[in-house]
View (cartoon, helix red, strand yellow):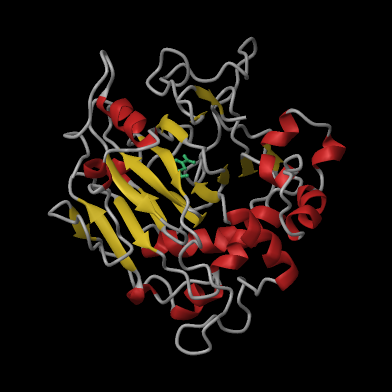
Length: 381
Ligand SMILES: O=C(O)CCC(=O)C(=O)O
């Protein structure tokens, strides 16, 4: 169910842009919001005939392997597809109760650490960005006071890159800018990919996006990876968002859906290169499914779990942060097995980027741009 009918196009504007702008409005029309797909209640609400149940390979991963990374047995996952978007899979919060906090803590405390790269590195001296958590935690742990102090480094974080570090200027990856991909996120991604029918998926690059309540992520296609036959995985934590999934061209009106804490998306096959965007963060207090208490009964993570418990001290910081924020991790395979990066020939500028549709005048002009609440788009840095 695309959201086009209640939208007013501006002159020369494509359908995706019209929808994006409408959802960014302070008061999106109620009939527009009533068309946002909500998978949290079994795909209840405005399901219509667009929502399909998605087939998973439930035998690809044992219950132990799933539990080890904090996920329920695959046969219990609620997975949906969309008519007209083959390869798109929405998995409504497959995390075991009490296991999301581990991943939230990794996003806030562990992954922003060196050697990973973040937006603050572009503006600050290396020494100043080296302990983002340590420099922020004591402030976020103390009770909020009436007079707002300056933002902590954690609150200024916008993105972190892992593995092959995405270059925001050239919109490419390079063999020269690579650090080890986190093992725990590698395991989580391998389980999800195998369940979605992609055994042997190699998590090689990660982009983590940190959204404040007025943040958005502009309309884009993720095509910098050299192997598009491998899926793109997306994990959401904290506040909910409206996600727009369009077509291969921006003229196609997008489908809008809620993404809530714990939801996972797989973009693969024909949906791997579809336009998408996040026009709006919704403050949803408290975010759904983010209990720290683990259920001792069925499906609780077993000994040897990677998704360990989070200390109360750490959770005090994480929970304060996600009261007003959302974190999204996307995981990508960059190269096919055995593939290497194209050689940069002498005389070629390695920073120039490929002239195949990226950047100015290309098909992905708005990739990696965020828009502020005034609808003017600003850079992702
Ligand atoms: O935050 C999201 O849900 C989407 C992230 C995304 O599209 C990306 O990182 O390419």
